[in-house]
Length: 313
Image 1 (cartoon, one colour):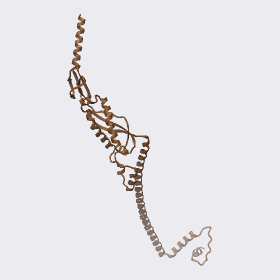
Image 2 (image 1 turned 30 degrees about the vertical axis):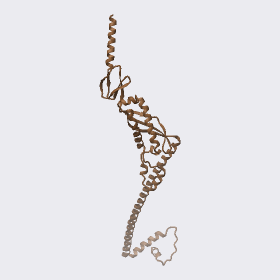
Image 3 (image 1 turned 90 degrees about the vertical axis):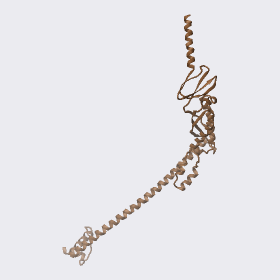
Image 4 (image 1 turned 180 degrees about the horizontal axis):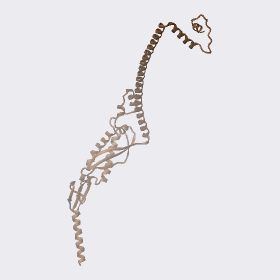
């Protein structure tokens, strides 16, 4: 009998704890709660952190995240306005803005992910198909705007297309289109980004050719500017070199002329002091320059050239 009483007491305690614990639920800083009774929402969502109460057993606390959540879609093959097919892979950030509407419309995060697949993929397709291929892969016209030569710029225009909207504008357009539909599901779409773009095989080679053409033309412009600058520097250097050589030649000729004048003056002074001695020295100098061991000279004995040799004899 005592054992039966103890068992009943334990059962009563278990039932009491179950009822008490079932009547209490805790809301954290990162969660919000919707209370449902027999599957139907009761009251407004509870987002204030702390300890809260509900009817045990008949009421259930449905927890939802308040933080930013990730969405990653599957790559989709989409044609651009110029009929070029590309694979577009997008990603997004979203949050649950209205937990009650979220529960009633999609039920869970898994259901929200499926609904976002439809919303974002549809918006992406609409935006991509209304723009040219080059606008999905470029953000600016920097290469065109940086051209300094009108001639080179005209050539570049044939190979490059000037864009009015780049990838950043396309991402904003996708976000704005998707944000129009997301609130009806209690979802606030914060951001949408194009994560990656791949080209189908028949487009890839053409895109690579376009990219190579862009870079070659930009590189040729830089080379042309470099050659022009090099020619300018070379011309200035040659001009300065000729100026230096001209000044040096002028200085050298001046020094040489001054030295010749001094030499002539010395010779003249020497000749004036002793003409016979000067004549003798000049004659001996001519002997040294004209006569050697292998030289035979035939001259008259009456000539001035021979008179010093005759005196020596």
